Length: 321
Picture 1 (cartoon, rainbow, N blue to C red):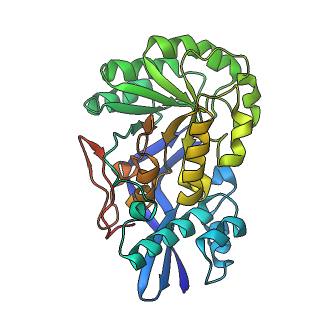
Picture 2 (cartoon, rainbow, N blue to C red):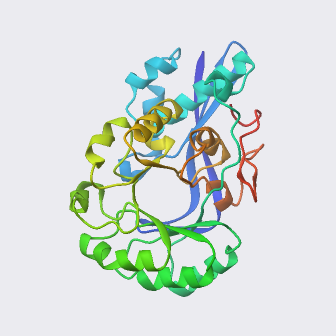
Picture 3 (cartoon, helix red, strand yellow):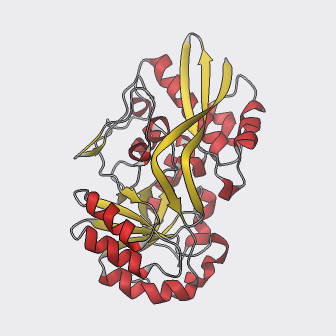
């Protein structure tokens, strides 16, 4: 068996801005694992917020034994981007070797289309209203916020897309005071969910606070080990494969979070269709899905994921799984 690591860059269709900064390209790591004439692929997005770089993730992957198994991988690497790419490549390899789809290996039904959020980049209110109006036909919009001056932005988005369901992502950008001030307005404007309003290390402030709109843990929830720290603070957990360290742990987190009564939100980093493909399996029946990254790209991989009015579809076997 051989493991190859490459770096790929995908141009974005437009500048993408969140509370932590802006980007014009998506930089990803692609893993290619070959064994017995079959090849499996996986992708990850190293994330600086979690102290990951292209160099560090590549080094983690290259530290693995060439004959690593999916079971051994869970202990050899921590949850994060590196393990994700290898885990998903091993799932793809296993499916191709068996001549089956990954969901068949998991004894799951074939994935059905899931409505995905479309993300509106953080910008001036008038620009965000224009973004919202352009995408008002979409049933679910995700609004990037995270500053003390977010109410005019939210008002503008609602004016631009009066019928769409809106979820808000603060990316750890608010203080408890800002959140408390905005909370009634989130409810008034029909926001369905607010994602990670406070920094992960400071979210104890949510204990005892009113939650008129459900709150989702993103940066505060990585894998099953995160769950005990979420009690009393969050109503929903955001499962991202780059946080869980792959499909294997994502499915375990999914079941554990459900068992503890959390709603499920399946999200993504800004990557290509190859990164979205395994997440569609996790997203089946989720309360909210945000797997729109390929819609933000100016270019994508061959055999790209299909998006239509029904949502994001299962991947073609030629792409993954």
